[in-house]
Length: 288
Image 1 (cartoon, rainbow, N blue to C red):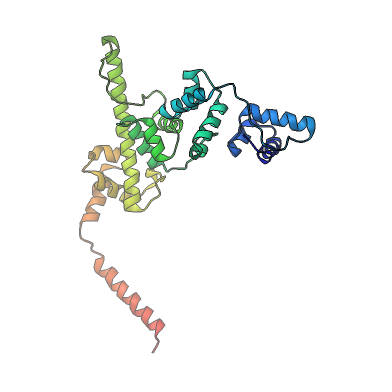
Image 2: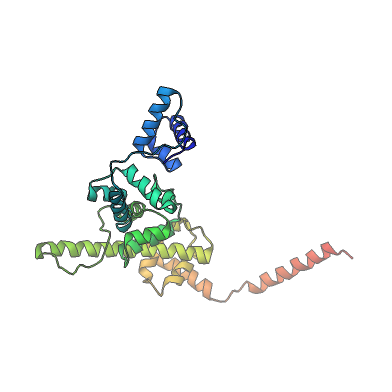
C-alpha cells in the first residue's frame, strides 16, 4: 500500500532519472518495476495520480511470498538464485517482498552494493581466506562488508580466473583419470596462495616497520629498507625467497645487515653535533 506522496515522489524521480526503473527503485527502495510504470502511465494520461492509498494487486499468494523470502534468506541472500530455484517472482518483486517483511535489509538488497574501498593488503588477506576457507564465501564477504561477486572478483584479479577458488578436500575422491589433473590444480593453487601470502606479509611489515602505505611498490624501497624487511621475515620465509621477491642482491643484503647490526663508528660524532646544536638553540632563546 502506497500513499499519494509515495507514488508522486516515485513518478517524479522516475521522470528525472530518464525513466530508468532500476535507478529509481534503488534510490527509493520501492516499488516494483511494473507498479512504477503503471503509476507513470496514470500520471501521463491524467496529469496527476489518484489521491489516497493504492494497494497493488499481486498474482502471488501470501504463502508464495513467505516461501520465496525464506528461500532467499536461507540460500546466501541471492535474488537470482531464488528466482531460478522457485520459478518466481521477478528480481524486483522479490526485493520488494524482502523489504516489506524485513525492512532492516533494505539497503543490503536493493540495487548494486556500494563500493567498498579496501587496501591491497586487506584484499589479499580476503582472497587467502577464500581459497583456504573453513567457512562459506558468503560469511567472509559479509565480514568485510562486500558481496560474494566482489570477493571472487578480487580472486580473479590477484590469482587469475583459471585458479580454483577452494582447496577444500571432498570426501568422495574423483575418478582416477581426473585425480592427477585435480592434484595439479590444487598444487598450483597452493603455490599461488604462498606467493600471495608472501606479498601480503611483505606489505604488512613495510607498513609496521617502515610506516609505508599498504599500497607501496616494494621494488621502490631502498636496499636498507629491503634488508630490514628480510630480517623481519626470515623466521617465516627462506632468505632466497625473500631477496628474489624484493629484487635485492644477496651481497647487498649482507652488507646492510652488517651495518644495521654492527657498531656505529659515527655515533660519537653525531652525539657531539647534537650537543652543539642544543647549546646554540639555548643561546638563541636566552642570549644572556
